[in-house]
Every structure is written in C-alpha cells, then in structure tokens.
Image 1 (cartoon, rainbow, N blue to C red):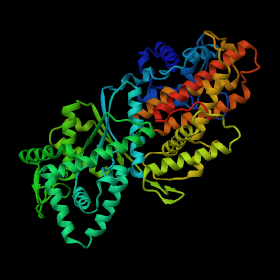
Image 2: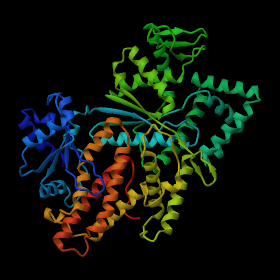
Image 3: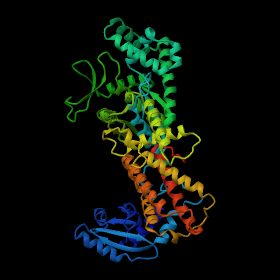
Image 4: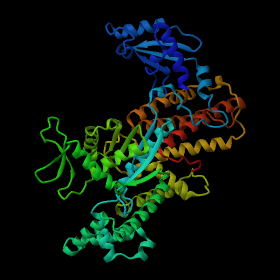
Length: 579
C-alpha cells in the first residue's frame, strides 16, 4: 500500500515542479523508525532532485528544501510537509493511512502485499537460472555446503516472488580423478550389501580407506587411473558403478533438501558436459584464443595487453579438460537450452577469481550474455561443531539443532501442546540456522554460536518463529471477530502507527534485496517487526476490548502476521503456527 501514497505525493511534486510524477517515485522513501518516536511517513532528499536535474544543482540545499516544502501545500491526503537539513518530509492523514495500509488484510492474509509496488516496474523480469548447493557426489552432504544451499534458495525465492521465471539448478561435482580412486577402492573394500544399508556412509568409509592405502600402494594408484580412463572412455561396467554412486547420492541428498524445505528443478553435473568441453576447446582454438604454455598446457590469455601476464589454463598437457572448461561448456549449453536472461552462481568467495575468468573467456568467445552472469560470493562459517566434536556432515547439524530446540521447548513454560513437537523443533532449529547465517553481509565470515542462535528473545530465527506462532494463537483465539470493515480511527495510538509505518518500508526492503541479493535487509526488517509486535501485544489487547476496538486491533495483528509469514517464506523459513 506504500505505492498508493507514494504515487499521490509524486503527483503533487509533479504538479508543483511541472515534471512527470514517475520521476519522483524512486526518490520518495519511507522514513525508517527510530525507537517509538513520532516520525513522518515519507521523505525526499533535495540532493537526489539536484542530481537528477529536477532542481538547480547550485545554491543552498537547505534553502531549496524549505522553499519546496512551502510550495507544497497540505491537503486531505498529506496533513503535514516540513523541511530539515535538505530533506522534505511528508506525513499522511492518519485515518487514511491506517485505512489504506490495512485494506488488503480482510479475512485472509495478503500474499501479494508489497509485491505489486511500482518500485519493481524497472526490473527486467525474465528467466533467471540460479545454480546453488552443488555438493560432490559419493560423499555425505558436508556442512560446508549449507551456505550455498540456503543463500541460493533465498535468491530463487526472492526472484520468483517478484515475478521472474526461476530455474533452480544443482550442479553436482560428479566427475574427476576421485571417482577413479573410489571405483578402484570399491572393487577392493566395497560391499553391495552395506551399500544398500547405509549408502553414503559406506562410500565415505571406502573413500577414506582407499586414500590411505593409495599413499603407499602404487598398484592401487594405477588401478584408480585405469578406472577413471574406463569412465572417460564410457566403458559400461565402470559407468554402471559410477551411475549407481550418483543415483544413491542424489536420493540421499533429496532427503536432506526435504528437511530444509528446498527443491531443485534440475540436477545437472560436470559429467553432463564432457563432450561439449572438448568442443569448447576446439572453438577456442579456431578463434585464436587458445595458446600453448611452456609446460604444454592449453591456456587463454586474459591480460589486458596480450602479454600472457594473466592466463587461465583450460587444458592439461595430456589433453584432458579442467573444471573451468566444463563450466564454459555448461554455461553455453544452458543458454541454448533454457534461454535464460540472467544466470547466478552461488559459491564461496574463494571461487571469485574462477568466475571472473569464466565470464571473461565467455565474452572473448563472443557470448555477450555473459555480462548478465553473476557470481554471489559468501564467507566461511567458523567453529561449526556438535557436542561430539568437529562437524563434517549437515545431517549432524540439523539433528543437533532439532535436539537442542526440543530440549529448550520442553523447559519453556510458554510452550504449547503440539501434534508433532519434533517437526516443530526441526522447523524452528532450521530457521535459527538460516537467520544466524543471513544477519550480516554474505561475504563476511562468521562465528557459529549454538547458544546465541537458539535464544528465544534475541534477534534469532527462534524469535521470528515464536512471534509468528503467538500471532497465529491470537488469530485462533479470536476466531469469528474479524469483520469486512473496521474503524481506522480506533488505531491511531503510536504503537499501531509505528507498526504500519514499518510495513510501509516492505516494498523498499524487497527492492533493495533484489538489487544486491543480500538477505540481511529482509531479516533485519522482520526482526524489527517482531519487536514492534511484542510491544503491541502488551499495549493493544484484543481480548476484553470493546468489539469495534477488538476488530480494528485484530486487523492490525492479522496484517502483521501475513507480512511476517510472507517474508519468512522468501528467506526459506517455514513458519510454524504453534510453539
């Protein structure tokens, strides 16, 4: 509903300055809240108008703001216009403000609240392919892949909610010499029966054992090379065993993804692009981009002056391709297959140089669409341990989060009776993991902290879930009270106005997230909303109030609950309705 007010204030500015109202819409922003002070609703920086050529760029900014505020007369929509330090502030008529902000929230919540804003009109919506998670097959899901998985899921959810066609891709590490070792090792140490009972654990044990043995057994090293050669030459027995490992892994990973509430449209992998990688090498050669280094490797010169001071190796001296060669092939193939308008890779920041080289080579090959490819890097998680010691596997982290949350819930006096406490503990534990991860800039490393992460009162995923469950409880307890209409004059207390002023910023927060693909804007917005709701529970009781007052307050809580739930889902959190 911010767009209703933004549009009308922009029209007022347009008439006064004799410009199209559209130029003022991006310049008008909702005023962020500071404590519970009374603030205006929208602000306009005169500096922005000067930069955009809408006001003279010379002269005193403060004076320009005061002159503009004096020209803009209050009316039935805007009841106060003031200027301070080069900023013009607008306060909307309070009754109209409450009416319009809560209009969308009748009997049901509004899943589209904030998403139909004119702020999104300039987004180039189309098909977005997001590649994320991307673990290595034949290994249990390592905890290190958690960040890529949840960040990629957030980006896909955000883009989808904003009207993009999103393709979610998991690009598995399913090729390389390690499969030669595993294939040879399975022949010696593997057991089909144990593979059926506990597939990835058994493959992990075989891999550890074969690595240890290969350190001092030359025959085993040769057997591994031989098995990988058989794979490269597509010999049926080797391919059949490799395919079994791949199928087992994808099946096991899907169970972990199901726990996280994550799905993929496509499971791809390096193995899908082996032939195409050789074609890429031929294309590089025919375009004169492939050079031979002194060591006999195939390289592409990426130096600005063409002096080979910065090269990227795409071919080993024995003629076999590398990871980047397969990535080049995969990118070209995806463009042909899925006709994406943008492609986003989500991996840790150590791969930043790899993607810089990947995009440079694609552009050198004449693929201008590489300019619309983007790498979203993230930092490392430090100190992720369970009670039993160092963590290796994600399942251990999820199990521990659930167990600790279940323990916390059983000791809390406010915990409600639930049909499935384990399922609730799982969902709340996962939301705690996500919020801890998303609170800061993605590129920063952060220290993993079980105790802080699972606090019910701090800025945590548990606090988000607790607030949502409490709102759901209020809605259940007051079933039947909701009405098609309500009296906005009964919600003029500062507590109500503050919540609505915060909701006014929701479309701007989503817009900011769409610009830099950082989840922290939305996380911090939702945490602030939860703090405001906690105050409102104390100051605006529904039960025991006169019916018209109760109906108005119910509408306010229902609206807050709807926005909270929608925001949580974009983050990849499944809201719980009891805890």
